[in-house]
Length: 236
Length: 114
Image (cartoon, rainbow over all chains, first blue to last red; front, side, top):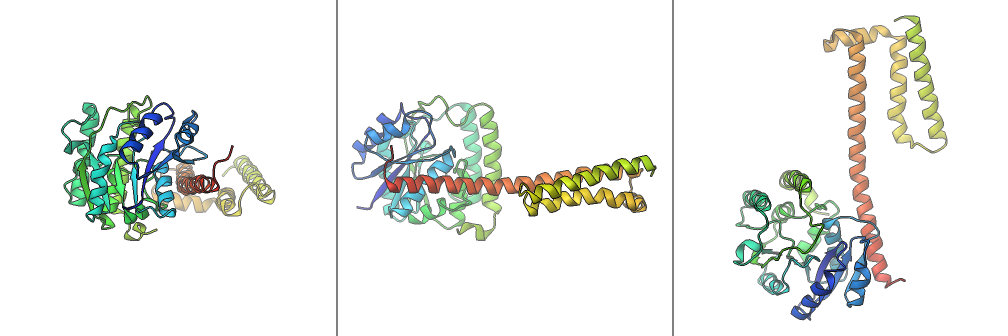
């Protein structure tokens, strides 16, 4: 059995963490749970520690991508063969981790949980679905892979993918479609598996209103950078 | 160029240069940044001494009057300067991110602190 680290980026998730962590522990007693506290103002850190999870606490708020990357760096340094990124707001289902691990076992470097391959997944508002469809189409064109859900935060990373995600110049806002395009250019084997997404329980969900607009433009830019960037920037 | 105008320009340019040199001397401005600002102080000086340069430059770029050439140059200079700042900010953002991550990972290695 390979060593698995489940990376849970958390920003002010003290209320959601108990459920997320206990569900994960029940579903994956073999895995180590790591909460990356992204400089929360609430009790995220003490809740995580109290529930027996490993904890890395950022001294300042880096945002989703920076927090995930911190967890991946931790996995690399501790020699975990697999790092799974799992949102701290309760939108992911722990039972969807197993198919991702299996995919890595079958030779994939990066396995992504897709809500569109799952029949009963929460798919979000019309606007979000439209945005996702655009980025999914872009990711398909740029990678030539049949991707359906490149914005998914549920991913399993083998050693090669961990190294890519830990690069200093890796997209550190929201590593979504741009990250997958980079992974594809770095010749990683990428697969999708069905995942049942739930409605996020979070008040400060990541993409709402004006943020959605800024996210879209930034992602578009980041995608172009990923697709047109220099080959040398794919290493280190 | 009327003498009054020359005096005003001269005073401003010299004051600017003085401030820059003093900031560098007190280590409040890094030398590599200072060169950009020294250029900003020296250029008006040069134009006061050699007004004909500005006139020929005006003809070269096809502007109607030397004043517009001057304004154009100023705006261009400021635009390049802020582009330069954006590039530096990008690099600093990356460095701060790397540092924050390193601090967090090292702290976690050390074990929990109260």
